[in-house]
Length: 190
Ligand code: 5GP
Image 1 (cartoon, protein in one colour):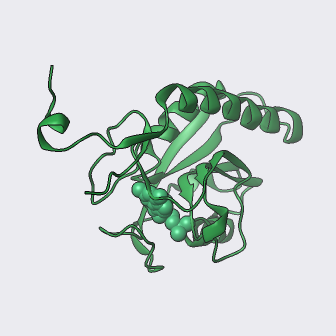
Image 2 (image 1 turned 60 degrees about the vertical axis):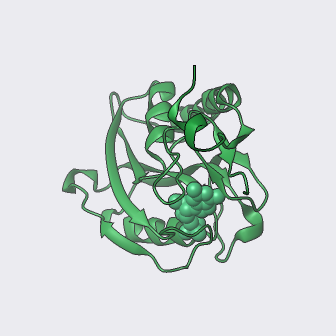
Image 3 (image 1 turned 180 degrees about the vertical axis):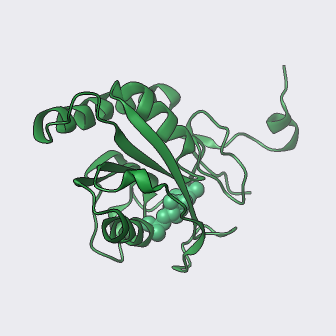
């Protein structure tokens, strides 16, 4: 049966498959959970504040918190830097950083889709550190592209380290398309 993709264009090439993502997210959730259980002495029923970075991290965040099996309070901020291009223009457009006051002095985990130049993650870490004085502040990213780094930052937890390729799917877009793909793909050139 054809779908709308096959009518219009070929589906993006699989780069990291649905099952590879699922396996790695499960492993990563274990790493994150072990960190909170061993290092941080979470108080009984204490929520970890998970801050997903929209829009790209929405699927990863949803999968990660379900795999974590720890109590969380879920928040989102929205930051975009790419527009319709495949290279970061380095200008952070910050439409929504509204976060509730009850996240002051808590364990905070930022969840990103990808750390590329690192500017978004670095800005956000500093902002949260300054505003909310967290007990701990960690960064989990599905992907990391170390060869593109412009500022010194590395995710504390990451799913896959990748070379300098522009990836889409599993929440990541190109011009607002392809977020719904259940795998990470590479755009076909035509
Ligand atoms: P950074 O501030 O680290 O340069 O960029 C972070 C943001 O750029 C990511 O959260 C993501 O939205 C976007 N980005 C960076 N690399 C890619 C990529 O390969 N594919 C897509 N779709 N977005 C990317």
